Length: 130
Ligand SMILES: [Zn+2]
Image 1 (spheres, rainbow, N blue to C red):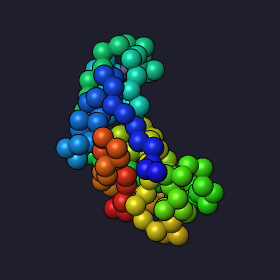
Image 2 (cartoon, rainbow, N blue to C red):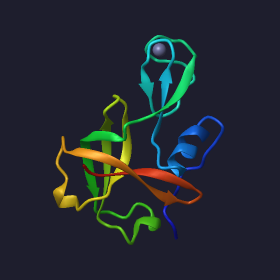
Image 3 (cartoon, rainbow, N blue to C red):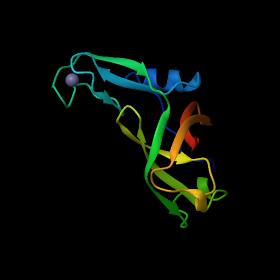
Image 4 (cartoon, rainbow, N blue to C red):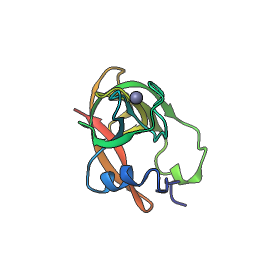
């Protein structure tokens, strides 16, 4: 069995189209310049609904992480133990991702750079030590 994978929809299509080209895309409010991930219809900072997509630098830091030792989904059987992390992007938003590094080498605050891997029909961000 393969790992579960996200699917693209109308709202998230720009994110996945960017990921397929190796670009990490974020939503940005045209009114106040706040950036968001995941997709929002309305800016949570100024309540305007005028959003655009911009390319992230792809740089961030490891905010927190866990290492999974229990098999919750058979698609991950070949990967135990695997990490699940929260990455704080340089632009501000935090996102969940996998860190492509030895679990023992992970440290909160470490510098990271985005990469992408195939997941089903889409590409998803993974992060590597910078
Ligand atoms: Zn705003």
